Image (cartoon, rainbow, N blue to C red):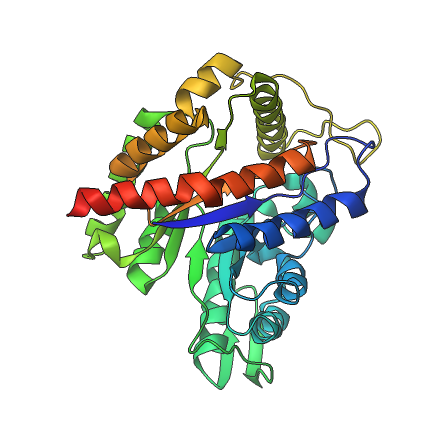
Length: 350
């Protein structure tokens, strides 16, 4: 089983400066490597406090210089907001400075405020994403490529800065069933999340994965699956409640942005408001791998048995959760949780 950290770089209020949020995120990536995580994923968002990483490839390039073994990934580059021919060179540059440690996650985006400010019609995002991914695959796989499509027309072009990994870094996709089918069709990997839901949602996700593989006449193991999950192990109730509070805060903002609601009085800081999808702390603890060390290990093993993911990506930088406490949590994963999970899975296979 692979383990990763998913670093959102959120800012819950003006009591957190942007430089502290970014530096905390970098420190979490460094400690993730020391703890034995295999990958650190970085989000991409713009123009509000939901996430302060405007370019996950810039985070990859920087973290490449302060780490040596952990893989560094984008989760995700929002393709409709890029010119793909420029993005190709930036992908090559990031993979070079990371010595071939880049994992390239891509998605179509969902936040109205971002698309408006980039002058892109969000209703066309799925179609633009599909075309831009076509262009990336051409540029990664061919020394010279060209493209003539509804959104981009590119004459014969050579990308001078090419990836170390050939023909390309591993590609991970986020999105709905159509995206999942494309992942199986073209040999890419896939992100899934159950948000704050429990085992039934994981069973539904597993069914969707199997259906997508079958529809493309592929083996379900042909694509790697990463489960993005809120997880936290502690016997300290105050710590657990703080993590739950920040996870719920993040979900509230995500839902508001997904529904294209602008909850901002100053044009930047989104106002947190309860939603119909809010769960109580008790319900979240029941649904998620959160609680005592043994509870988290047992619950993760149960979820792995249902979903059968290749990777668990635990969400770390949520809201204004205390940095020192989160770094200790990452160390606990390295010392206790990751070894226990892998031991149990190894024994189960004997």
